[in-house]
Image (cartoon, rainbow, N blue to C red; front, side, top):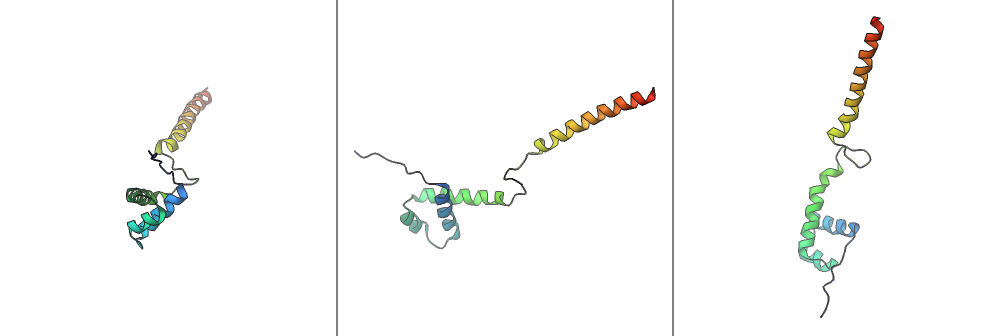
Length: 95
């Protein structure tokens, strides 16, 4: 009996096949036979490519998008610190 061996494809290979599928120049069957992959894989990779394509153009620096909370938390802490300092200085100046 033969073993069912699942072949693991690299990211570059998957992106290449998905891009070819998205272009639509060749049929999925042609891509499957050329690259020795199942049609379901080609469809899945194409779907992931198209869904993730908008993320390439997101306005982020360094490849990571910061959440709103990650941006506002340090600012709110600084505001609180400055308010406390301001209140302290007002009391000190009155005497």
